[in-house]
Image (tube, rainbow, N blue to C red; front, side):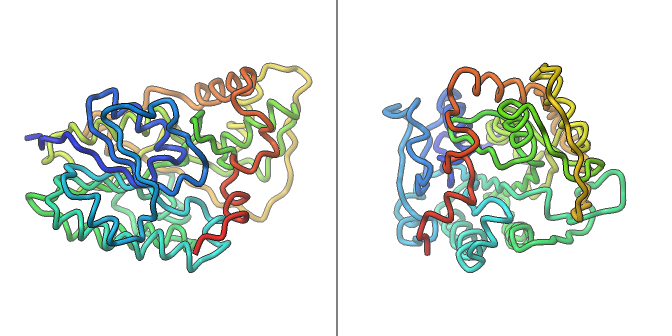
Length: 333
């Protein structure tokens, strides 16, 4: 049985993933309310003025604001967070206040206001480093950083909130890659693509470490599908979401093949960071039939085309593409 969902509330809807997701939800016929600080600018310009879109510039830590704007919501997709380890470590107190402290009232207010579905974007980083070749959802969480620790703690808080009326779903995406109107160039595949295209040279530190990735089109398609799945298929569930697990050397090789310049070189440097992740996405394929439709090569091609078309000017230097640089310029408290 599917819940009747019409009104969708997205935290962080003007971020890297949200900027691709929001237009898809509008196209699918949903009314979408976005809560975001808009620190990366007007990334939803392409859908501005859409009759189904409401944009709220605000802080998700503002409980009174949540009390005001959540009523009438059928589903919450919670994307907002300080979204990588370096940005989090820049101000751990700020990171905790956004990534964990604000999560609890968001869930409570959602339940109180009869939200039917609550979809949480966790992270595959919650597993830490495992020796096994396939990390599955049943394995213990051993987060290595504050960022992943608070992702795990949010999961721990959310799971017992599941009821017949309040369907909770936790997704643990791999690292997202590809082009977005709110571009990030501080993620593995995107970094390699940027350097490969602009410098015709890629430095790989180590190289044998595996990194799971997921194309931004696939993860955003999945969020849309998660509003449509019968609730008994997703209620209280946790799913890894990734594509193939590639080594850093393999990812660099994909970039080299796409850029297709015989002068391009891949340089291997030593590293102390030998963390390797091999996340299994078999469960979501088996239970929901979800299989990514886009490859890592597709993501690189999309980025190269964006570079060629001038959609990402000053790609090596513009602060807006790099979360840590933006965080350093803001005085968020």
